[in-house]
Length: 295
Image (tube, rainbow, N blue to C red; front, side, top):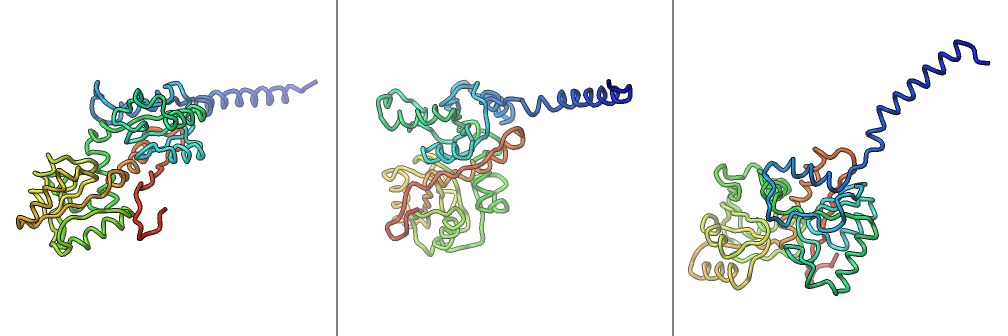
């Protein structure tokens, strides 16, 4: 038979144990769902959520328990495999998962590759969230912020225009090489005299059409874009140079012209999602040069 002292000690320890269990239970057993992650993004992005937007849960359901989050530029099959291998079952992607800006699947419902990708996501209990419009709408623009940080251009920004940068005069070839090195680009394309002195630079990350490409170019020595139609802005720049204008165009490739913005997104997410690991997974540059080893 236990002594009164033992009974009191046992009772006290049991009481403390019960209290400790109650205190840690909400943290250790709390389930964070994909829907809750999206709700926190909506609450934290700093702008009203649009009714018409591509920013939606593209795969999975809001009820899926989140074990970890991957932030990426493009949810390619390769990225999905790497995320699954790391136990990151929610993927936040800036660009589409299913090959169109709106992630429309009607035209590819019978496509074997689409079915393979959809099945992989389902089999691994994954959720994929398209985060494009509101990340650009964040102030400052989340993609631009990440790109400027990656390039180290914070001190070069024009105070009146966040797309415009001023540098010490540098030959175009050297300036372009510096960008390629910092972003690890294999397939950058440049139009213009390699010796052109570069001081004022306009950067428009991602896809740029003829308009606003033309007025952007008018404000700078060189315009930097991710991609553009070759029969529009590329032809315009060629004609501008042929007419005697001292201009240049640098084409980075869409993916690498925005990728650092999703690297920054991973850091941003950590500020209000502490429960699960969050990691940036880089999408591979899709192109390679025949004179360089393909990765």
